[in-house]
Length: 315
Length: 278
Image (cartoon, rainbow over all chains, first blue to last red; front, side, top):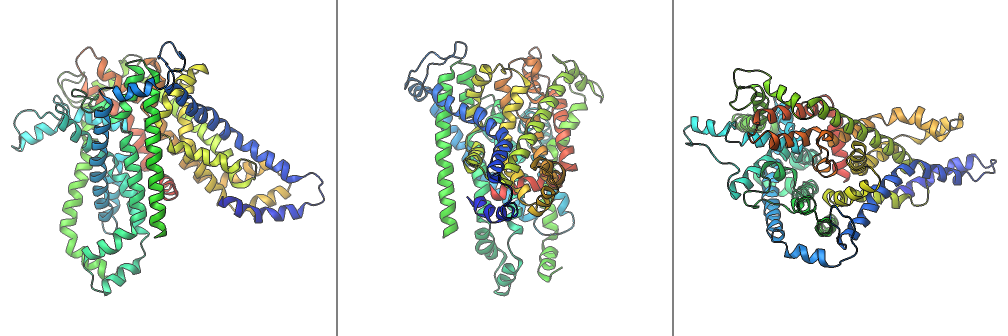
């Protein structure tokens, strides 16, 4: 919308300059614009719109992986999802995981951002070190921790033993609780620096004289943090919140690689369920139905967060 | 330096460095350990005595061989970068400099890709690529990965073009340059930082992606490196080769860390502009 308003006045001098040419220049210019935009349009149409329609169609069809479309069967796939013994546990586990990761990750990211905010010796080094794990891919990080947690070459058990804090090997992935927390640790390690950087930009956007004024009023560090830093940082915190919640609800790589959903299917996430339905139970129809449910839930969540943010901005 | 900063930094210096240093050790430890574990002696790996590159030799000989997987990953990453850059350069130019019917709808639809979860689209894309005779091909995978880069890339290129003063290309057009000539000669150098950022992000996303190749590539010799390393764990005759896995992690991580350290400025600029406006 904005661009149109800004485009018009700037484009008009060109129009004034070439009145003698009888060709309606704006038409050919519009055609050129369409030409330049056509690769984008092709990508969006073929690889986004069509699959989006297709997933809706598939979710309403009997669609085995190997035999293809067998015709509509609405609402069988959706009732099959609700009856799936793994579905509700997967939903519950995904939500639990999301809450834990979001609280710990954003808390640590805020601490890190506050730590590297002020210029002091060594701060550049700390920024780089905290961000370094974010440069890795999630699958690489998961494979790394898979070795790190392993009883055979993992270093943590021996270190704790050497310190006298543990005897015998520690099972990091053996129980459902330890598997969850081990994965949470991996994700916090991998992403804390990324969220730190977003919050750091927010912190640096807070004008210095606001702090000065607070200091003149004799505010303590904690008071300054609570009544100045936190409220002014709200847009950045909201952004990290959206990214973190969305990312965690769609968790896949880390559990697929680290726990394979185990032990006893206790760490199966919703996206893992889509994969299992499609490629282990060979049923693309129910996989598409779960995909649709995930889509609708995330859309609602995004819209709610967007509206919430807008209301907060207006207030 | 202001008195406030001086005071707090004097008061808080020692505990600050203890805490920051401790955290830095925790953040560095896994990275350093994986490099160490990949060359150190471990029972049950190809490197069972003394330090050396036995685990890397395992990787070279595993299934289709490390070089094949590296080639697959390089192919997919470069194809994704080329597709993303080409499409978003032209698209960004169109959105920033032209008025045409459907412009705003197309821009919003491109950004809407971000609203749809990755996993939702992969099942229909699996079927669709099959219909297009692109199933189980690296180019099909690259097309999908490029599509996922488009929201960020198009947005980035649009704001890059909008930041260039219009007078620059208008004078070029008066000199007889067409719109494409203006793009090639005048605008391309001006939007180069944007292109570097977009290319960097497309490369890292393609190099590291796991779930798309897992679903779209069924032939193990066509697997990109992350998928191949994940497969390696399950297929080594019952005994799990952790040493070779960590060697694989090092091979995967080195290009990412090198790119980050070399292009830190573009890296941070890129996701900041995405983050702030996103």
